Length: 259
Image (tube, rainbow, N blue to C red; front, side, top):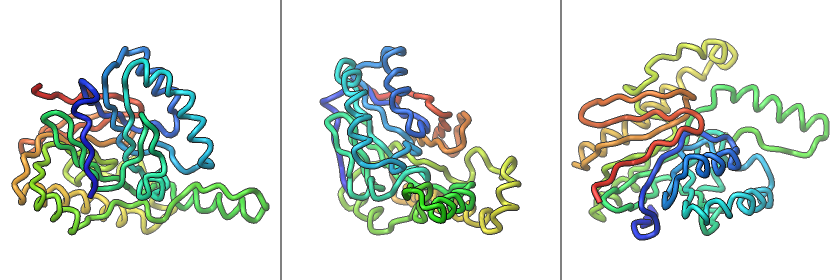
């Protein structure tokens, strides 16, 4: 488990939904909406891993001027459309843009934020098929899917959080517990017909989030807010005293702090 403290670097903290590699769009939105002195946590599907490493250096060079001028920083949580290696090994670690390993804890003023990535791609069989076709055609290999995309419940990490006395009040993930919106698989029936194991694997994904939620509650953490993306729509619900925020693509929600 890694911890990061950004309390003294920025005045506010916000969470952004999926961006699917559109970092220029995000930088433009930060500029248009006049976000300043803000730490922005992207809740997965950042679009990291589809290109060669030098591509992300170029991306950062393009957006760094805006981030510096507005004094903003980007923390990236792993989605299903992200290469886990970039996050596990923190391969992106620029001054104002960083990939976070799963179970990272971010301290920001009075907020203690747990970040856990991963989800199931409903189009995984299509993506695997496209990679196979590209290989047969002799095209340069370009990853479109990573088999270790699902979120994992890590007992050791949860135990370490408790033993270190960290009091988690906010969670940022890519997917969400099973009782959060959406609670049905309506709209993905075609993908489930194409991929017979998809329904069960999605249930397992949501059950993993349930385990994280239940463990936080049983360990007595003052959980108040949970942000997630993945579903390409927006929803706000208050369940069991916790506010759950589903963020649409590119939607930015500022996190309240008491100081």
